[in-house]
Length: 223
Image (cartoon, rainbow, N blue to C red; front, side, top):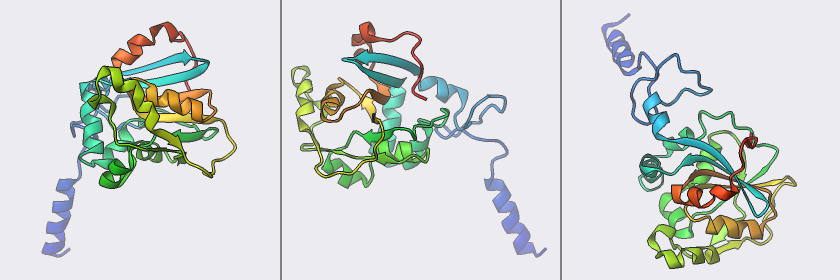
């Protein structure tokens, strides 16, 4: 082996971690954790605050995976606004996700956001699982719920419309969204498309608290 070859080999070995590292903080992952896809350390996994709650609202089952806390807010910002698209794979990484029996319909970003980002965050999240996802909706405005006064937040649903002549497979529809703040946009989507299930990656604690009377105890999970 030449000296140059040996130098390059040693440089490569130095860059390869001796143990798996967390996809978020880059800290070491405990090897004894029983995970389907061990990509997070215990600290980051706990910080994501998985809740797995199910609510039945007007006859439709709403499934919530995480509570939207400060940690999740930073992760979504890093993915959406800083375009750290690698983070898209972590939200469902430790779930044995198989939703191929459904037609997954994503809630849309505005056209302006999509142009700036160059991608749809919720589509990237599900793309990491290998599942196909459809975009039958579009927004007529770039209004953001968190920027609206409380009295106007329900009006955000008026910016959602259904695309015409948009093909989708003949399967039960599952609406999917990344963050649920008031549920107004998702409720509007439920009126535009016939569905019996909604899946939310992360929901605001205040919204979950408002839906406590609709929570379904011991309900089977969506997959």
